[in-house]
Amino acid sequence: MKYSFDKPIKGKIGTEKYKVAISWRNGVLYADEPTSSGGKDTAPDPFTLLLSALASCTLSTLRMYIDRKEWEIPEIFIELNMFQETLPTFTSTIERNISFSANIDDAQRESLLKIANKCPVSKILENKVEIKTTI
Image 1 (cartoon, helix red, strand yellow):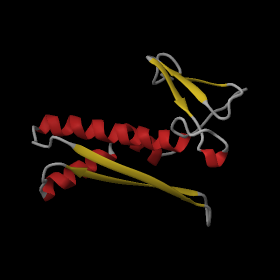
Image 2 (cartoon, one colour):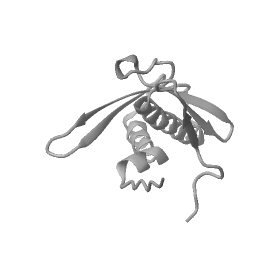
Image 3 (spheres, one colour):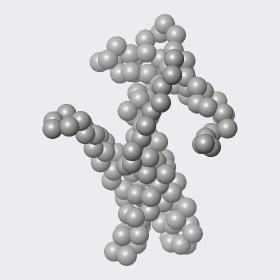
């Protein structure tokens, strides 16, 4: 098995509700819970971080493709939101809306949609994920 990261992502929480420090290869980022959940809302919550991962991966993947095609599309915009349903089974739905600062034709639209769905984080979220936890 080959891991995706040379160094694992590490997290730590102390007694300050619910501020989490997440260490990654080049620094530390923080997560918190909204005040409605008892946090101080000083940093993104876990769901925001999840959608942020999808946003950044989608945008980077599209930029690589657009640059390779040498299309004149200076800016790409993305909006994401999600909802969950519990019946008949637990299902999470992420809505992703992508727009561009330049006009695109139907062929470009079709290609860009396919590429957006091929971003690595999309592939992770759309396929089977196993979480193996140890204590």
